[in-house]
Image (cartoon, rainbow, N blue to C red; front, side, top):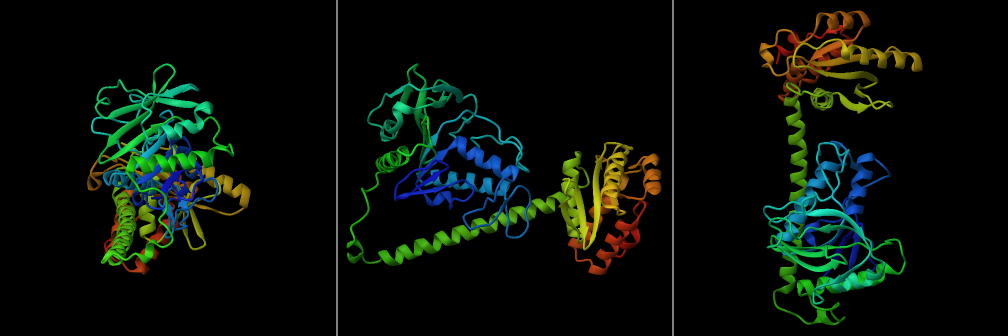
Length: 442
């Protein structure tokens, strides 16, 4: 039996210490430790782009769609949640160090993420403020001394600092929960909960995780607790055990390894298919996106289809790259006609570039006016003042419905010469871009 510990350092030869980002497949383990607080901090760091973070296969973790060879953070977190659910379906025991519920912000495509996103819950329950409540204390004791994880608590009982409690009186939780540790005031700080075919074991936290004495003591206790909870055999087999042959065992073990590899390959293919499907769905979203960020992302997907590279400038603004040519991009959605607001934003950016670099930059405003009207029925997407301003200052106004049609032409196999002509037209037009002659050939 091997134990996987996520962001909670344990010292034992049977423990694999990792983070949620660089761990192997969670479903490969039947004994898992998760420090909720520290795991959330790792996700925060990845969302902020701090340091070089990678997966178990050394793929860089990026907070966005990612290029070939990169691992998008949102897809990786989805995969981890699925892996943990599969582990519990296989009967795994997951020890979780409690922390107060709190949101995790900044992960692209993951709004509403919280610290407990990873954990499945019994039907009708959720790991939120209704079941897990913030609290602080340093006194507690066992109420079920026979529970295997009491021995883990005993290693730091005199230096405990619990940060949350489980409300064992919450509706529906009583039928699933067994309390084995309580605080001095009677709150549940050690709770064993049946989830699917496995168990979640909530534990209080030690006061000082950086101490040198705790990891080996806690590691030994954790391995013994998992062994008892899972009914595992004690210790490692003796050196001569492989000499004792069992007919068919080697072939079956080889088969298990082959199937495990096939499952891992299928998971990677599934994650890649999800990324491709999400990118294609954003092409269509260009027709109705209602916020600047969602229209930026959708327009970038369309632009990439016709040969642009979507990137960010040094100031963090969206740009489309075509060889040595860069186009500053502003997204402008509106329920009615797009008015002058995006003009001022783009003009300020262009003037800043001229002042700092003494070059003549190009710009485009992707306009999605009358966004809730069918694309072929839109009659006034852009205000006259904005059209005149674009012609006067010298930048392009690109209706999102035209950009969408360009992306469709590319996805349907339009020749590269036509796509290059589209990019040239977008880069050189002052005012409304007209692409009908190029789209009419599709």
